[in-house]
Amino acid sequence: MCPRGRYRDQVSRLIGRGSVGSALTEAEVHSLIARAFARHDVTNRRVLFIVPDATRSAPMSMMFRLFHEVVGEEVAALDYLIALGTHRPMSESQINSLLGLTPEERAGTFGAIRIHNHEWDKPETFEKIGTIPSGEVETISEGVLRLDIPVMINRRLFDYDRVIICGPTFPHEVVGFSGGNKYLVPGVAGPNVIDITHWLGALITSREIAGTKHTPVRALIDRAASLIEVPKLCFSLVVRGHDDLMGLYIGTPEEAFEAAADLSAKHHIVYVSKPLKRVLSVMPKMYEDLWTAAKGMYKLEPAIADGGEVVIFAPHINELSYTHGKVINEIGYHVRDYYLRQWNRFKEYPWCVLAHSTHLRGAGTFENGIEEPRIRVTLSTGIPRERCERIGLGYLDPATVDIDAWCGREDEGIMVIPRAGEKLYRVSE
Image (cartoon, rainbow, N blue to C red; front, side, top):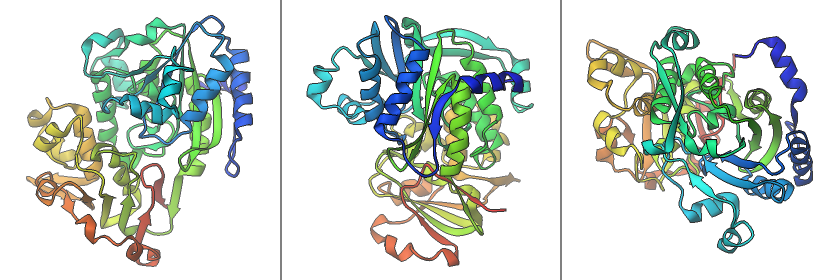
């Protein structure tokens, strides 16, 4: 991470405003954006915005229009790249919905703007920008990993004079908090970097890492992003609900992330007085498969009592993963040590899928061939019972779930989490 002296210098350049009470108005956001571009001139420059897909809550429609209003007539090009990681590509209609555009606006007013999906599975779309040597990886990971990491990044970045990240910051199961350079690595990085960063987070465990600002995974991501020589600027958002913008911080990816993570911790970490026995995580429809809806488990695990249960309630979900479903069918869901104790059997599978598997299954042990998860994970989705049981998860028929019957039972250790997935729950000390 940055030395403290240098960090103080970075803070002095930060533009931003945030609150735990009142959302920023559109006029306030416009003013902050205008200040940022007065300082970071993009006149006659080619600019590429890196933005999240629809699985992240953010007022992207407002940001898109304000960026166009402030600099759209000044730049030589203003294009977008969606930081999908390994999520499936967005359709034209989904992109329009994300950015608040009608088909007519997309073809007319904003017709010159090109919007691209990141294509993680197409080797020809990447450029190698360097290698992080094994010794440095060992130091960064605090001894957890020792291997060379060739860093591959979406080659579209090098067609532009400036790369601008715009996305929200939330507690995150892999890196601690999302945002900042994470939109570059692993957001628009190659599969090897995606695998390694996710597996490092899994080895540390999401229970330990979620909601921690400075983590080995964050340090590794920042190191990989430092190899990108295109000048970078970051608009870090802190969002309440779906699109109430509570904070906007603009600066380098590192400094904007620092400020946004501090405010996110105030908005997005919820403390309960005692461990919960049973939780119903009600997943919003922005999560289309279990791969993304698993956040309903990740964000609750630290607050669940030993032997407790997380029920992921998402009747609209019918698939484990639109990208990785075949692999998940083969390996199932298991605690971390199930894989580590049988590493030769599993090491050739994509490490990001192994990470997802153990994040969702949670903490536990694997001794003498017997797996003992700490808590139960149950799916109440459109995924059938037989498939749930085959992959090692419980099943609850969503038609039998009466959400009202779960409400008001916190004294019993039972809780409903509406719109689960973005707030992290912990037990107060």
